[in-house]
Image (cartoon, rainbow, N blue to C red; front, top):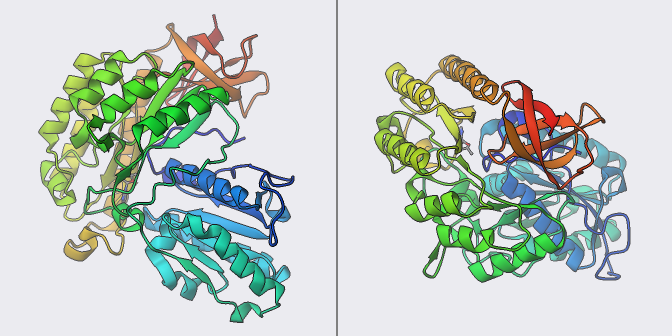
Length: 481
Ligand code: 5AD
């Protein structure tokens, strides 16, 4: 099983090379909702961020509720739904290549229904059908309720032997600011960590970002419902819950803000750990910081996307904070929560970025010393504000060189921070068997570092104290004490 890491809302490209494993609901068995005239076996393949993983769980819930079943192998499926990402160009290229591959299969099995869902579907819309005319279904993130209707209508086409080229594709592309899927029970992968979407959409309008255009306006789910959801997750055996939102800390429900939500959810009996991703620095309120400092279950790890260390670049990005404000926020966080782990996202080569502006990012990373960082070259996205107003004028080679420089810097900082942990003992929540060694477990520290250690009597789901003997830039290696 793939290690589900807590990443920012979008996995770095290396991680999204591999699709996430599909949610496995009523797999390989009768659907809980009983028989269905056109019951389909659906394989869901997920690319991109945790929000997509969570959306795939929602899709599995919607399908199962209406009598379909999800399967864990493509070979067993008569429908494949590819849940996609549009954040950078290479995320889309990867999906196009995957679709070509699926089309080979469809040539051999013409009854196979191929659906493209999620952000890339919303971004490319019907243009996707020019590139991949064999796609039967194009559906954006707010239209998943229509999945059963879509599958029924497509199944009728298949059953009446309408030739592949004459089948009408099903398009579901309306963004709906009222859609929060609050009534849908997602079907989650088993494990110790559950993802819980607390907010959909984004109102921030960063100039580089496609998200507001493919996920629509921001909307929060009711606090009372979220607390009930977490109670249910704990009852189901989950130890850790990760709250998800595009700018998760702009959450609000009437007078309750994100800090109130952290307190309320953090108080749920039996919940070991509470995390969230990704917050926006401009919404890092005292109420959020208080809850992180005082609620025992809230992990002391903050993924705080910086994007750039230059106030001028931040201004062109419309990030709504200056480099100085970000630095002050980090100071305040470290004062209130001295052992906080900080991670970030950085974009290099954004429109007009000069050498000097890039060096401000480099210096900021050197000063702040993040525990880890996701670093990207700017990728122009059609439809964004930057695409309309700012030339993508930093040469590709310069973007590459800048990326290399900060990766090198960050690797050495991460390695230093980790090696300082040697000799100390840290609580680790055991997640599963190490992929490389069946005699060892892996788990996460409170600060979201991966720890690997020989198996002991306490198994998956337990919190064990691990003494760190050895480290790399990415892993802590030790013994249970
Ligand atoms: N180009 C490169 N990186 C981007 N991100 C978002 N949009 C783009 C883009 N157009 C990065 C940001 C964000 C992370 C999820 O992805 O760093 O925080």
